[in-house]
Length: 469
Image 1: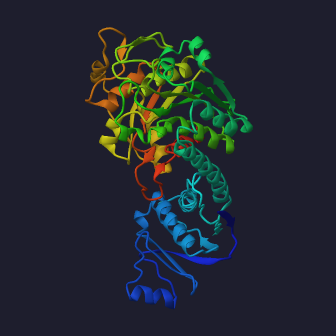
Image 2: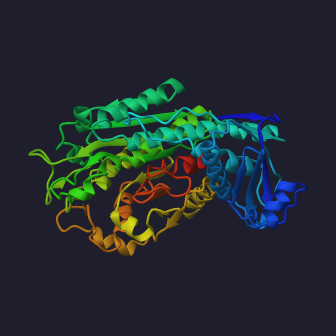
Image 3: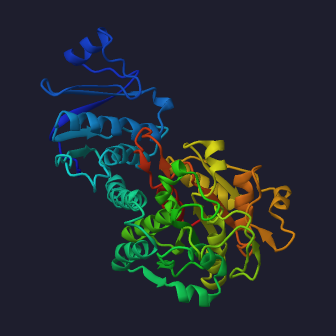
C-alpha cells in the first residue's frame, strides 16, 4: 500500500454522512431506490461507472475506531475488485481532530494488508493499492508517516506471536529482538542460562530448566530523552511454549500455547515503533524467555523456590508459571535498570478470558493517575482495557504457610490474585498490570483484527510513551 498526498488521481471515494447531499444522478438514484442509505460502514462500489460511496453515519456519532472499521472494509472491497488507485478528500469534523481523522482512515487501509501466510505454498497475488489523501495538512502527512512505522511494528509483533514454537523459542526470540532493534540504536543485551542462574533469578530459572531450549533474558534499552529522568519499564511475559509443566494442560488447550509470549512480543514491537519514529522517551524492555515443559528437570508442584528479590515462592501449580518469571523480570527492571514506572503485559490467566472475553484487556494498578494516562492512550489506539480492583483483601489468597508467597491463589478472583502476586516484586513503583490472555490472540477475526495474533497494546504503549507520561 502506498499513500500520496494532494494528488487528484484515481477512483474518487465520496464520504457521505446521513445528512450529506451530492448533486449526482447515480447517487440520487441509489438513495431513491434505497440501495445506499449512508449508514456507517455502508459501501457502494461501481468501478465501471467510476462510482464509490462510503457511508459514515451520523456526524456526531462518528469515532476514530469507526473510521478504522469502515476503511478496512473499503480496502478489502477495493482489493476484491482489483482497484489500483483511489483518491479521498480528508473531511473536517468538529468531534474528531485532524490527526484522528487521518489516523482512522489510514490505519483502516493498512490493517487490511496483514496476512500471515509464511507457511502457505500458494501466496496471495501481489496487489498494491495507491491511496491519494487530498487536502492533507503538514501535520496529517507526518501522522501518516509515523503511523506506517507504528503499524509495521504491530505487524512484526503479530508475526512473532503467530510463529509456532519450533520457530520461536527463547534463543530465536532473542535473536529476532536483536535483529529488529539493534540497527535502530536500541541496546539489546541477551543473557543465557548460566548467567541467569548467576544473577540470582531463581524463579525464572526454575520455570525454564525443564526444557532443552534454554532460557534467555532479553534486555532492551531505548534512551532518547536526556531531558527526562523518567524511565518506563515494559516487562513482557515470554513463555515461548507453555505445556503447563507437571500441572499439565489438556491437549486441546496446548494447541495455541506458542502464543504465550504475546506480552514479550508487544514489548519488542513497542520499542521497535518508538525507535523507528525516534520518539523522545526512555524505556527499558525486559523479557524472561523460556519454555514451560515437562522433563526430569522440571520444577514441580510443592517445590519452594527463591527469587531475585530474595522472597521465597511456594509452587502450588506449575501452570501458573508466567507470574513466576515476571516476579524476577519486574524486580530486575526496578532494581537494576533504574525504572521509575512499570507496565507488565502477560497472557496470564484463563480467568481474564472468562471474565472479559476476547474484547477487553484486564488491568490492575497501584497508581490511578498512571493508569488513567494509559487508558487515555488506549482510547486513541482503539484497544479496550477494563480495570479490576486492586484490593488487598485478595492478597490473603496468595498466602503460603511454608514460603513468603504462593504462586496460585486458587479459582476465585484468578486475574486479580495473579496481578497481586506480581505487585509483590515491583519495589513500590507506580505500576500497571495488563492481562492480555483474551486480546493477544483471537479465535476468530473481529472487525479489522485478524484471527490469531493481534499485536495488542503496541499502539497503546506507543501513544502513552510518545506523550512521555
